[in-house]
Length: 202
Image 1: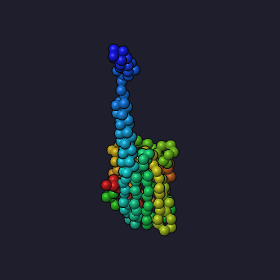
Image 2: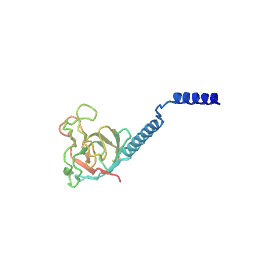
Image 3: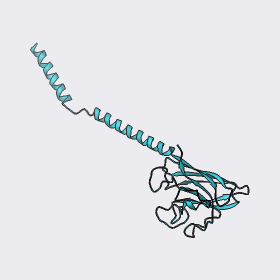
């Protein structure tokens, strides 16, 4: 019996040494995995929320024109903003499109919209080439039927974040003439023939 007890004692000691006090990190690993999963979910939710942000501007006539139209803005998951612009009753040819600093189209000539949106105080130019205003967009080509459309994905804009890049409460302005992308301060684009205030979709 003593011999059996002795071997049982030795076995128990051996198991204790083999197992030892050790450190069980299974709980820590589980916690880490949970934190990683939560962070991933937060990132996905944040990107989804950002991508869901959208705004539009209903364009109305200015300076006696008969222009109407709509500009829609959608935040992409990459942090850019997609602009889709469509207009009607605009004279055939090429017309400058800009964002102006004030979301105010109350003046008959749309002068209440102020100058180009330019928080960085850069020179006017063509977007993506040298200096340009945050509100510089492009020229819109209109057919003989008076209908025109423009689609752009713009880096450097945001929707509703309150930063200098935020396009909300700015005005979309369509001009009578084309932007030459050179003349200061607004590309010699002529009078304002349409105006719309950018407002977030709810």
